[in-house]
Image (tube, rainbow, N blue to C red; front, side, top):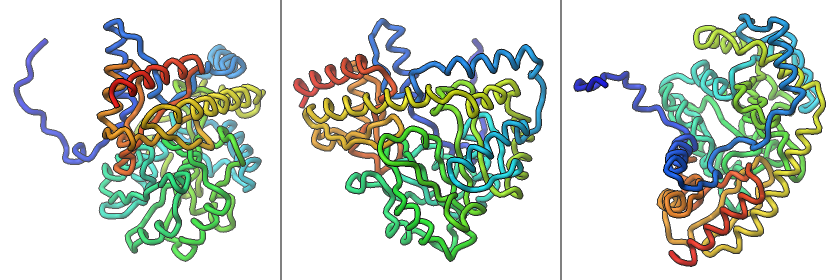
Length: 396
C-alpha cells in the first residue's frame, strides 16, 4: 500500500462535521469479537427482529415485476399517497401527495431541512441529550447549535419555560423528538400545546418534529405538533420504516411538510442521490397497508424488555434508571459510580464485553448517564447486567 506523505487539504466545513458514536462503538465491539471475545451488543439502535415476511415478499415481487428503474426524486406517487393517508389517520390532518417526500432513511430529511432553511449564523434549538446528527448537521451548514437541556426530573421532556429563554431573533428552527433517542422520553399533549404557544407569534420559526419512534410507545399515546391548528405548514414531520417495521437496512424514511418546501427538498435529493430505491418503496406500501401485527408484537417485546431491564439495573450499585415511556432505549444515571460517562462505557466494553454508549455521545448534558439499547433478547440483557453487576462489585 502506498504511503501518503502530504496532508490532505479539506474544506473548512469538514471540521464541523460530527458523527454517530454508536457506529464507532460497534466497530470496536466487532474488533473484540474477531479476537475471540464474547460481546453483548446494547449499543446499536436497531430492532433485533427481521423485517416482516409480507414486506420482504412485496420487495421480491417488485423486483420480479421490474421495479428496478429510476423514479421521481420525491418518491413513487403511490407510496406518497399511502404515507399521506397514514398521516391523516394517525395525526388527524389532511395531507396531499405533494406534501410528502420519500428519502433513503430519515437522516436526509434532517440534512436537507438544514440546507434548505438554515443560513450561516441562524440559530437552531435542539434537544440535549439528543440524536447527535442534529448538532452535526446544524454546525456543518454554518448554523449556531443551541442546546435545550432535557432533564431527568422531567422524565427527559422539554421544559418550555427554558425553551422560551433560548429563543432569539436569529432562531430559525426548533427540533423536537418524541419518543426520544437516547432517553425514551415522550412528550405529553400539554408539552406539545405549550411548545406551540411559546412560538405562536413567531411565524418565521419552523419545527422539525422527529417522530421516527411514534409507534413504539408503552404508555399513553403519541402527540404531534403537526396536529395542532396552524402548525401543519410550520412543521417538518420526520418518520420512516426503520424502527417500526425493523427495516433499518432498507434505508427508507420520509418527510411531510408544506409543498413549496417539499419541492426544494426534492431538488436537493435530485442533486444528492437521484431517488430512493424503487422496489424498496413498493415494500414500504405493503408495510403501511398490510398486516400490522408484527408491529404490535415488537412493541410488546420491547415493553417486556424495558420492564425487566429497569427492575434489574436499579439493583446494580451506582446505577439508577427511570423507566422510558417509548422507543427501545434506557438512559441510566451513573453519577453514583463516580465515573465519567465515556470512561465507564469504555471500561465496560473492554473489561466485561458489554457494548453501550456514553451519555456524552448525545451531547454535553448526557454526562452522568449511559445509554442502553434494549433491542436485544431478555437472555442477552440479563447476561449483560450480570456482567456489569459483577464488575461494579469489584471496581466500585
